[in-house]
Length: 261
Ligand SMILES: [Fe+2]
Image 1 (cartoon, rainbow, N blue to C red):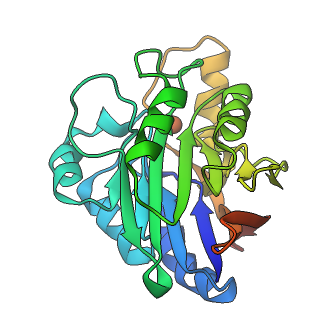
Image 2: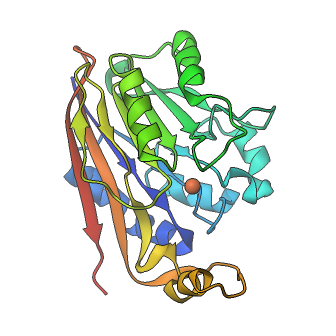
């Protein structure tokens, strides 16, 4: 079958969560989406609370992935143990709650594997090597289609992991920078790749946060607790079309919307 996967960029703050609640179900219908993965690690600004995870699932996410802010709200730790549909990076070096990958029920009995990894360049130097961890997990995972959210800063690390997993994984997207990239492509072995999905949250912002606070930081001002920015919300996502018989991605398309206000 032709499987349509929607990967949604980092949801920022309650504004982002509310935008997702308003828009995601209609978007899934319009785009004929079968399976949706949402990165939720910024839904409480930094980190995610159980109520925000519940809201993201209610909005229509099948799986939530996380990243470097997973432990900023420790209230989520037990939720990660209790709910197998939310993933934290699989390559954390130490014993931490939750799980980094899972296999989920898709349409027509399809087994959809999802893996969450974190990058080490300029992000989490304490994490295990995402390249070797990914290969190890693929050896254990029994799935028909495999999707990877690589939460990483460096464009080089994201591209290199995509090529490293080409032929073994059907879609790999980057998250974390909150800036959508225009390099969606299908690699020679059939892996659909994009360097970054973007974000869901206030459009007049720096990465979803208040512009004046970001400028103040760059001017050397005293640090302050970042608050979410202003303006109508945008929703950045990418739709991957996967030929499940051939185990190849056939199209990578941006799906972006900006709400009017
Ligand atoms: Fe992040």
